[in-house]
Image (cartoon, rainbow, N blue to C red):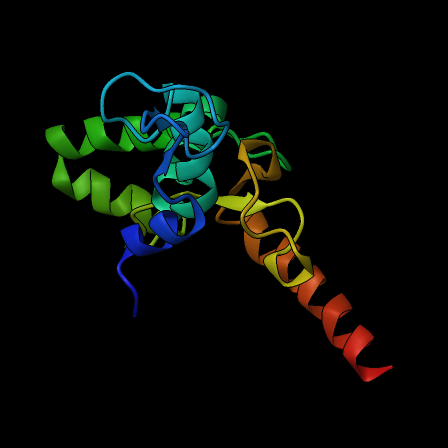
Length: 153
């Protein structure tokens, strides 16, 4: 397995202009000093495209854990459960069991609007949406069935 940084370096290598000055690996503007990107915006675009963990963090900042399908606020649920856990472990276990959460650490997924199998990988932030752990299997199941029917024909 390749290291994560290798893919970014292959896709967006260091660049210099004809005078030897560093230019942005994404947009080609001049960079200050020995920087690979001219701004945090360019850096974010590259990292969202190449690093799923970074993309998930940016989706969380944008959507705050609210499911795009059912509208439930799983960000608030996680914050509430964290407070309950600090106060009473028994109540925390009971609530998690009653809600069917199991041992989950994430209550939502950063879901590709266009499936990766259909060319949706390597997209920007607009290509992601927040889908909760209850809606995600239903949605991916529908997509998987449609994909399998296309293969069968």
